[in-house]
Length: 113
Length: 118
Image (tube, rainbow over all chains, first blue to last red):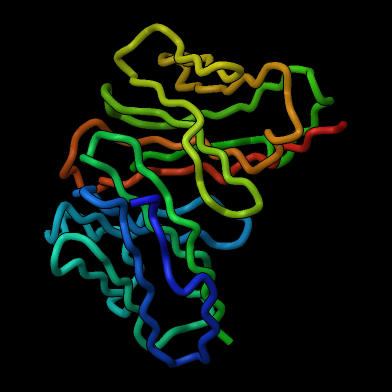
């Protein structure tokens, strides 16, 4: 594929709503990463998939955050009962293997009112 | 846990001049990777340069080079002949060389905002 794509690019949610953020990695990339970038900060690691297996979810901030990649390609990050502190840009990255360069998508900016 | 520190929130340089961005990190590991990423206002993160810790030779990519001091845990980025298109946030990042250690993602610093003066 041309690059990593993410949708929606912008999402506004009312506090308490559930949201789903989508990531389409580069075709053939087995590794997929999610990061959260708060305003004025560097990205923080959330979770990592190798194909459909979620090998590391140590960065997920609470049990309201859930990620899946059921067929080893597209991934969805779901946030339940959103809170204001969830407002951030959510970045997705993919790589052809764990040790290779991570290519980032444009991100989804989530604003929780 | 590893930490990455960028002590310069903002740097400014005249076009065509050279600028150095600082980064220090803390780790107990001996094998790891270090990166500099560029994030323009459009938000898409782009890899600028990568350094393997086991390599003593400093990485270079065209106008971009690093000064990697393993003992001092320092990893600075030098941009030569600065261009207007270099204006962006620059993030230093660390990653363990061992997968499955519970920290499989990149660890980023807070970033340095680079301004290029025409």
